[in-house]
Length: 246
Length: 269
Image 1 (cartoon, rainbow over the protein chains, first blue to last red):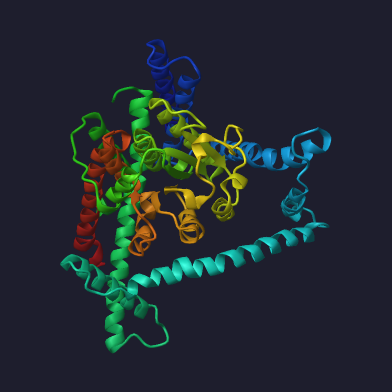
Image 2 (tube, helix red, strand yellow):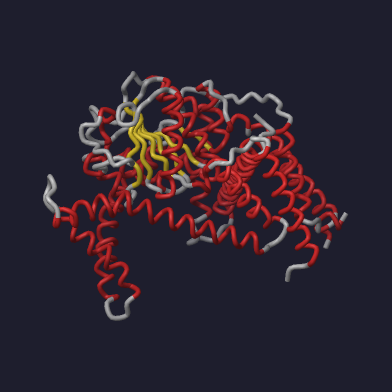
């Protein structure tokens, strides 16, 4: 339930936001044009999203749903203009009724129908047709993916493991030894057919240490990523909207 | 002391907001020394001759714009400065707007024209299949560019018939699409590939670098800042390094502080 204090905080923020924008528009720092209005809209939505940090609220929910709707609408338009219009409508439908340089491309019919069948999942009577599309996707996807992935991910990734330990430089050699110890010990840790006792237990403990260091590195990178997003938004607010920084 | 363990999370948010805002307002200079993998991407592009072809796949959407758009801009500055032909494309439908904006804005700065000095092919669905199709024939994969112009006979694509003719490809990615570029692109059609990705994905790239499947890697905002430094065109990413460093120190302090409080009070229970 929304408290009275929350409503008053929201009202004051809205008033402050309105006053700031009026000042920016009046002083000419923001143009009264598509770009200026676009920046104000983006700022409003940014602030609405960050309002979640205070607590969940209706303004955040509106902005969240708006994002989902806009993203979906934008994707649909892009798919129409980049795929359906040039590859289906202009390639197959238009030449059927109009004289064009190239005649109708009938080869488009099969993939278009298979695509259309996907939507028949919603029909109780015709949903069986969608299985044809899925069978095609799974069959073709597996056929393409399995040999290529085995080659590019498994075999090519194994190659460096068979490289000589001595690389010519001290630190390069240390690096390859670390990789070797890391791979072997982590594999031991995930070897569950034997009890982790004695030598196997010792090696798997080393594997745990390698895993912990990897998780730590991932967490560090994640912190960096999240902070980068915040920095980008703050740059937008301070530079593009308020014009405080150059 | 125990009260500190139950501190309101919003107080931490305020600290983080201040750690980001203050360094942005009172800029202090920070050197951004480029790292090995960033230098490797820079050197590769720098070694290309005039009219070579660099393909940039803008596989991200607005949710990762803050990290990847600066990378895209820095790469485009480098390519256009060297008169390299840029082939832009995206496998993310929501990435078209960002890619188009980056290419046209930077292109205009250098007086480059669409269709002659660069081409933006737009979006095509199917990710791995699009890559395979481009590997066979780029003109069947993209018969028209993003603006509806026919790609066949386009000056920007002169000498390019498939991915095999690309001198260097960079995948700017916010998801797992880089694997498709490695598996179906680089390994099958044998061209040099670099990746620019969000920092979250950074650790995933090292096995591919070690296996020499990637030539050059930009990781997150720092990677973008390093590339901006190398190109000599410091922009938003470089400006973001001061707040990034301050906020990292703050996070380390929080971790140390939290552990200290935990070991001195909480663990006794």
